[in-house]
Length: 133
Length: 136
Image (cartoon, rainbow over all chains, first blue to last red):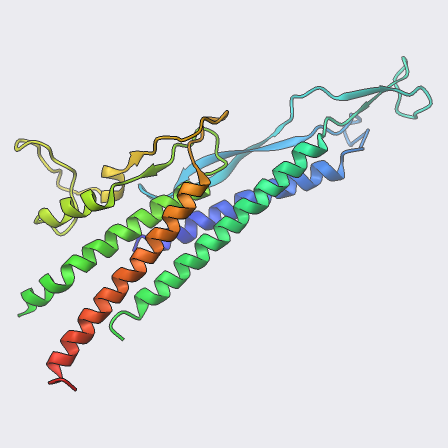
């Protein structure tokens, strides 16, 4: 019954999108973290999605990895700041709030789509079960 | 008699199978809307159904275009053998060809048609039962 594999597809998509949402929220939460456990300013993270085979027709999605955003860090001149280097510059995270908000909306819409897909499939399967009654 | 019952319900059975294959394919497209490089796929429903109806095998086989083509012993599902890449309407930076409007529309359309198929098959069964029970 191939309709059942839609549950796997939608489930994989929901898991991936919620991880994306998680990364977005940690980026936004750390938008001003000038230091971390490594002693460096926080670098924005991004998820990378990858297609996985549920079976030969059904393709789900998973998070292949979380990569560090390669865009340059924000550097401001503030000699009075406790984290300023010897020249008086402070390195702060390369989190772009606009990008993150867009990412958040996209992730939440995709998540909603998956939930919708699952509900439609559930209704269809329930109707299939009542054939001939 | 059983053969006749089989013939009667067979068409809708094949159609429903094809609809559920297509639903899975469309669900895969929607799920991968944010995957870089993913190419959306779909198949021509009426052609796939015709191929399935004309083939005598229970399982839909590969599409053969010449008399000397050999169908393999283990048939592959219709979804993967006849699925084709969608032609993108708009270019995208990451090579993804999923157009969410098209996919959602096709998904809803396919779900409704699957539902219609179920209604048809239920109606047929009800008709048969009515005949068996002497109109009661």
